[in-house]
Image 1 (cartoon, rainbow, N blue to C red):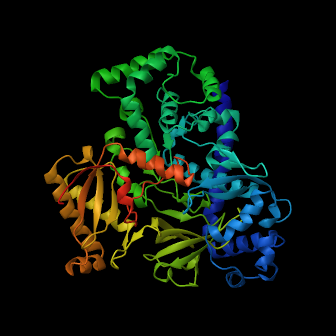
Image 2: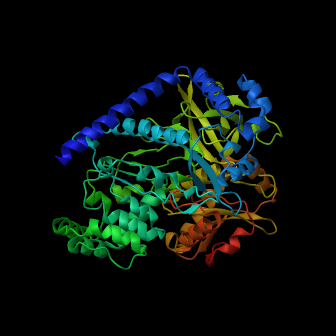
Image 3: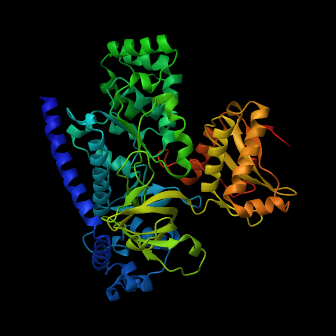
Length: 564
């Protein structure tokens, strides 16, 4: 009976998702019209807000009016209005009848995290975007839904980490959506909703595995591939504990799980899974390890970001999963979803024209005081742009500093891929190295040298002349000869990718790249420090591969330096 009900509910949701997907694809054929109508409806709805009055929304009749009345801005321009909403004055940003359900917290450029309003409409947009993405991904891998939706592992964070002065929850929107799932659909997701309240990263990973490792998993959804890799590495390391917990129907006390969460989880873990434990034990006996390619052999695909800094992590997937396809989850931030990928194996996705109004600043114009912007339908294939968002969450002409490349069109809607955050540029002497160039150079160099780094970070090193240091953990590169070959390969690639870098090197204004070994475990400590400062969540964390700060090197424990 339960299986029948799950299929019935799942079929209804799938049919709704397919209707949304059909509507979305139809709308891309007239993206310009859809975008303009969406903008003007939002302007009219919020014309009586304080932001609307300050920016003369009542006089806006066209996108050109909108650009004249509302300047381009970042979070700091919106923050005074958002602060009033945090204190209970919803009319600061929104028209009458608007419900603010929560604030999505995300890393800020200062020590104070950003709080992005989540209205009922913006939540509906968020969920609809996931439905459109999900049904297309699942229909591309029909075995995942052939006999009812197979189990899904998705890790969420707490949506009630704190409260605003007006008592509005602040946290992760993933936790809110997880809490709103119907009981029937919730049984498809392996991670119990209470697991979102676990703060300790490794404890959360362990609980996720404890509730999923014995199931015939269909997919894993995590924005950041490092989340997936770190989780399955922990599973291999803690294999004995996992097997014992499954066999005994327990949850090891070694993990930092809040008492109320542990009490809720105890009910779910009380059943012994002896057969599953014996199967895992047999895998370890045969292979000496506990890897998902063996305990989840029928996994259909992996779901995570593929663009920008994320590509470096994807090289680690075959060791753990074999050759499984990867579907990008789309360019998503707390501010909103920007793309909906419709194919495996690419970071590119169709612009989500249905839910947000977009403008784009050509990359070469980004430094201008008042750059001219381009509407979505007017992008040029092969060109790079910075994205501006206007959303149902009260953001207008919001510069999120994401650099994207237009790689094609789907109807009138552009297909774009994420390159890097605009802030991730470094220039000691005018070379303007981008994080995208660093990723490309190091990935190419790794292949040329025949090594694989779990992570790395390029930092400017002050000296005479200044140079760049490539930080790697000692266990990733214990051999001096390989380190020197990596230096040479990275240097060659940076010269090829960046003519200004080559010119500065030739003029001796820059010294060569040199590898700097840091102590094992430094990346984990670095992640914790950044999260503590920014207030973001583990799921949102993006490991940077370039930080333009000459003081940053002092924050890492050194092991050895090559070429010094």
